[in-house]
Image (cartoon, rainbow, N blue to C red; front, side):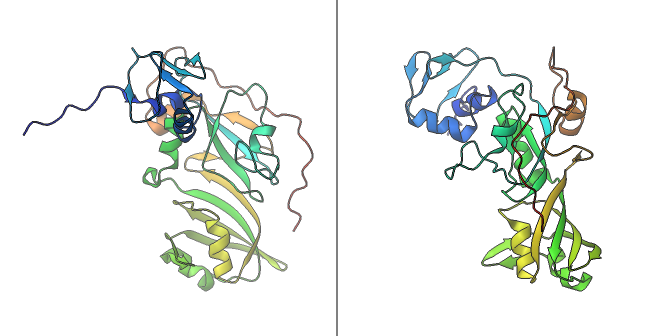
Length: 268
């Protein structure tokens, strides 16, 4: 029995994502809507591999050559949702980013009332790589809860708990200080399921009233102010991820901010 030779090239949706035109999921939707053509022929399935010799167009516009993978640190304020378009009309992080930023995608999400470090990238492949649990990077949060937790109360988090049928992997959990009716904790996790920290705390009888992501693997929030964006230096990105050094790579820009509407931070 002869083995089949794997097709050359990459899936067309992946190529579109790498070119920064859309995320991979969005690219699959564009294909289903008949808005993508390969070598002049409209396609209706993402199950197609293309190479550099193929001409891919989206809405009649040929794809540009993919830019080198880039990564930015963004201090997300509260009051913004991490989505391109919100059905409820709420402001999104993309509404507030500096105008000179290229098209970017978020690495994971922070919910409406969460703040702190959000990674942004122009490369769909890098986005998926950073989101995979197998990357093994710890995401750390400063968490303020209402209540008087003890180390013993937090112990189940370190073993992993199940809440409403959802199993959460072991977390790092440290009680930092009690401040009146509230306490500050440091929580570290590798998985990052939807509202994981808030649900885990509620299961312990604690209410989260402030949640700040301070790091994502080796990348730190540091002194970045709410609304500020700072690009990770290409050399640091290569060192951390083992990326190849592209020719003529873009130089990182200094911190950038955009004048934004006033959003009142969580005052609890």
